[in-house]
Image (cartoon, rainbow, N blue to C red):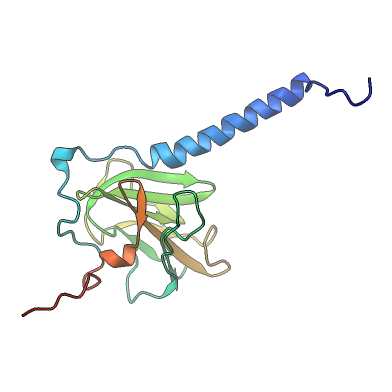
Length: 185
């Protein structure tokens, strides 16, 4: 019968099922594992409380690409900043906290730190030198910058993203002196 839809064969259905399972697993890793282990509310300082943050790389920042907030959670944007450096450079904890993820996501090494004020910093591509559950302080090495997976390929750069309550915020806005101008009387 010409034009009648055919049912997928058994191998085709299996391939589709495996594809959907892999997609679901990737979504769970990105939104589940990276978003897990939030410090309990008793351990969190009030959001917006004075926290100390610093650059996750030594030296003066060389910003290759700035933060661009997406219009919606699913919209295009740049959910962090890219900082130029060299492969093998030490990657530092941008603030104190607990490592909640240290591993590979989509072929790139990622380290995520949950900070006491409720923010989460993620840096990539990194070869982690810390494990999940490690307490870190501002400026402590958490890994080394990898050349593969860089947003600035063929050059190496570190992508630093920060989330607060599920939304990305500008990491450079957390640095000392980056706050709003306040006029004193």
